[in-house]
Length: 178
Picture (cartoon, rainbow, N blue to C red):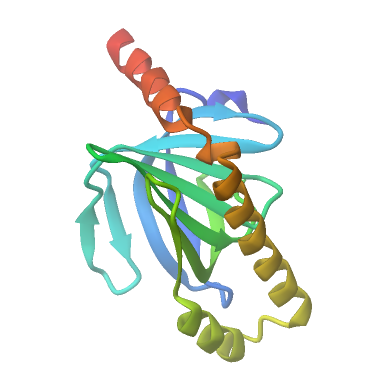
């Protein structure tokens, strides 16, 4: 663990299986690091896509980055409730420069009423063939999608009511001390 990260901004880099960069966030403010995860917030953060396009995030988002699970969960705090965008992805690591993970295309969108939608299944099939994900990796990724759906339906982990709001409050305390 690197407790020195807590209370500081870090870069966030997302890659594809072939090692190419997919997306970069200019900063994420680290709220917590444990042996199991990082919890990071971004708000109006510059994002650069692999094709050079640049945009800013629209709302505060609590990012739950597990160190030992093959997914991450972005909890977007909006006026009508918390929306969850989940990436099937490699476990997140910090290499001294940035938090990094590999995006594996499959995504899960969970709405404030906990209804959900699986996204990008065709992109997943294409990249699986192009980048040779392999049978074992395919099994891991599909199991993790099932785990995420179950967590959302049980409102557990980062899906539990109040999770995003709690961490947004922690962030506001950091800001008020500056």
